[in-house]
Length: 290
Image (cartoon, rainbow, N blue to C red):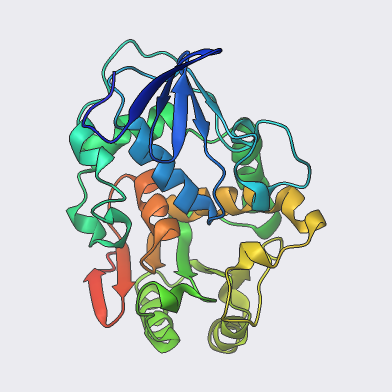
């Protein structure tokens, strides 16, 4: 049932349990082990686990995970964000490649080198957003007057990301956004960032063309991720809103993004890197195409 030798199988009163690195499998259900991490970091580690399995999982349980993204304990948070998998009856393809996601840090690679064909069946089977999330995306489009085909999405990960990977200067994002705005003169510019200091810089440059989803919180701190600073009340909606906005970015005409798990999943949902520019420290991958 499992590829490689990274897991353990043991017998318990509840039946056979397969222990993977970030979760366990029993009776075709995958249960996430509690881990304090970012939303899409949890998605990446879960995907790496699921890609080790030769048989499709029928249910995913996260009643002890995603604790920073819910207000109340106990319920299966996975079903809040994603649809439970349906049995396709087919294999999911390149298990070996997708299972190396975390080991090879594919979320930090040049995204144009990703094998999207290999990732696609896993994303479709296990990470189809819930109806609640999809409806929230539509709600944001209507509330802010957004049309993905005429939208430039700029995603800057601030706060403590510099501890993990060198950050690109915000001026480079602004310059790229200016280039994109010239290519698409009637497009709105959607800025998605957790760093409050970046908002005024973009507002000064793009004025009425700029859109900021006010339902997503920001912070001025640079010593910890935004999800650690949320109040219990903010957690109630943050995960759904965040995932909904990532879907909105993924469908945008042009995407200018950072390097990290959120950007990685934006690209996975997009399914390609056409019209996408990725910044990684001093490096730039991709190009803006009208």
